[in-house]
Image (cartoon, rainbow, N blue to C red; front, side, top):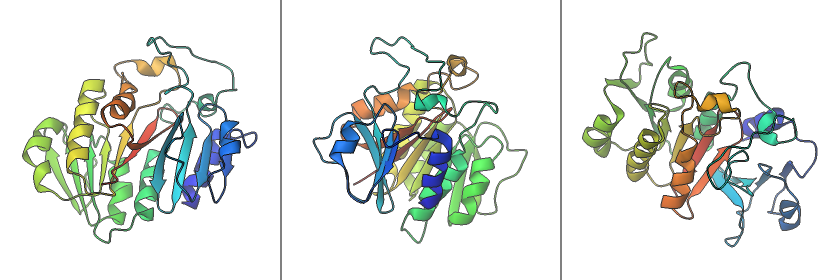
Length: 262
């Protein structure tokens, strides 16, 4: 967990406790003074009545994010409001390079903090295999799904399927037991949300689904060849699954962490 905490601090470059705060028990006074996208890390859950937040439990810690709005740059009517200053936290870590958030580090450390002795990981959208290869040593078995054959090869503990994610989800996924999954295939919202629904349905209680490209920090990343409209996915998840544990980190181009409690 220390690796995740140190990484978040390095990315967000917090100025004071209104932007980042770590404490043993949730502090309602400090949280009330925190700004959009600020992070509080505690060893106790936020109260059930707490509004304007997202949170997820990792190991013995809770990462809680302040949200006056779901995405700092997204208005309620669906229009965009980009701030080019360095004041918003989401502007603290911008390219180059284009993919500036280290999602393999985040995913790997969440897996390390998790308890199951037998761990299985599924990845939708393998691409160069960077994340898959980072996770493979931490789990017993991996499954990679992509419509392209992976020219970089896959780990020895990986079963690779050259197919569409929806075909894998309907034909193979229901037969598997797994605790971790990563969605990074088709970046259209409809596809990403469908991939999430399949994976979340069958994942073991206490398991995590990670989603990439859910918080692009500049308008150009909304291009269909980049993040497209994946940012809509966590919004739809919160609407479809009220009370779900979900946290979207404000780091370009975005990682969302979802935990299945039961």
